[in-house]
Image (cartoon, rainbow, N blue to C red):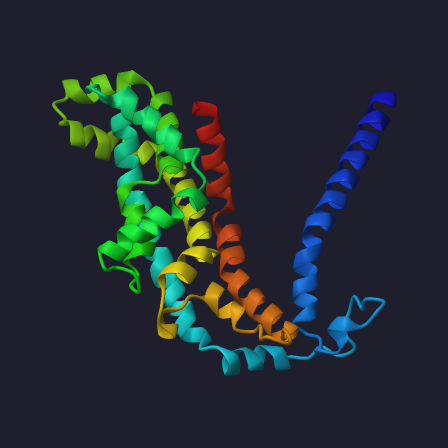
Length: 278
């Protein structure tokens, strides 16, 4: 009886702590949603109103007057989709080579890959911009897409750890059956690596969807802007139009939230497997 009571108390305490922490993290999202239904005047009322007097949808209509939301949405989807395809095609290939194949200079190249991960983006931002400027690609989508087709160090490292954890017997059995090296990669290891690849794809999707710095630096024409750049247009010199900005933020966040709930099982499975194998 005492053991059951102790278990119940521990369970209640555990859930109280988790709910308290989740409320803390959900608070900014709640404020964003509620503000999108307020008027501009209600945003500055003190003490803070946690609920609007009236649930006003005007801000959601005003979004489309300030920015071409549909055009920016399509641009964002295009860049995000191209980036996800890029990392899914190239990163597993590079990771497999670093994990399973024996070739001269492999360890040195892996060391350089790890070293590149340690360099902050702000340090290499200007040299990369100069490179794309020399190639006359500034003002196009190429600087936002091309790097993902050349391999992302963090994703290569993540997938390499996964490939290294797979048993060598699989490789030997495939070789005895007459498989080529590419067949071993594509038909044996790649299907087993699916949860880790899905995790990498979701990470890249989040990075590209929320990227503000890249489009701000490289895109020069308004018709090519993404949703993150569009948010900035709700700010003017003297005032920020908070309700439409928060309404736009809600609409921008919704696809990511829906995707996470759809793919959360595979995402958690991929992170768990990658952690175990690493």
